[in-house]
Length: 206
Ligand SMILES: Cc1cc2nc3c(=O)[nH]c(=O)nc-3n(C[C@H](O)[C@H](O)[C@H](O)COP(=O)(O)O)c2cc1C
Image 1 (cartoon, helix red, strand yellow):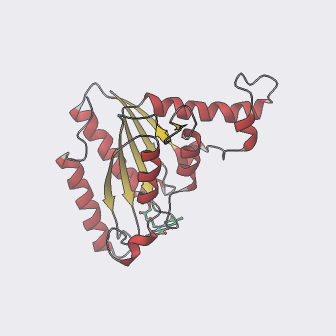
Image 2: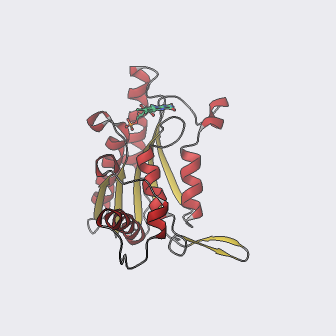
Image 3: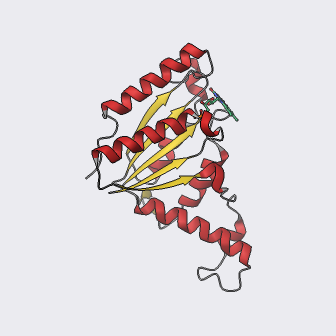
């Protein structure tokens, strides 16, 4: 089983989502010793923004200058890793009501017509069916209920985009209210870690 482990938080050792994705990956490895885990730290690997020049570069990269060719190859590598994974673990903090731009840059490399989706006469079709995505979602405030839920462009967006790729099995391990108080943070992390330890979100594809 291939697992792709993605982190995107910029807060290094202070990052809660990193702590949670590590716990999820460890749980998966304990449950499935055959799991091969590929790790990508999007905060340090600096994926360049998607550009028109990358999209329009010829498939064989003939005549393309070295820096543009390198940017295209990074995108292809990200896409191949994603397509090869059965389970994808994503650390996704809420930044400014949405996701880190590093995570968005990664998603921009995955959304490739003919690879992760295609358009048919009856509408778009996801081509990455059968995968499982587990998102470690962290937020400073509370968005899972109440009026602030309309401001959640993080979990809602991730569900939409993975759904567009054909992935219906998207689980969220959530720690929210992290910046409200020390107590609130401690409780939220403990609850998320309990959820991971119980293993219910993991239910892995064989
Ligand atoms: C750049 C930045 C933007 C943030 N924007 C929001 C926000 O819009 N809403 C919110 O509730 N928390 C926000 N936060 C708080 C983070 O979601 C929270 O601290 C989270 O724990 C950080 O992620 P991490 O600990 O998983 O790395 C923001 C934090 C940072 C660093």
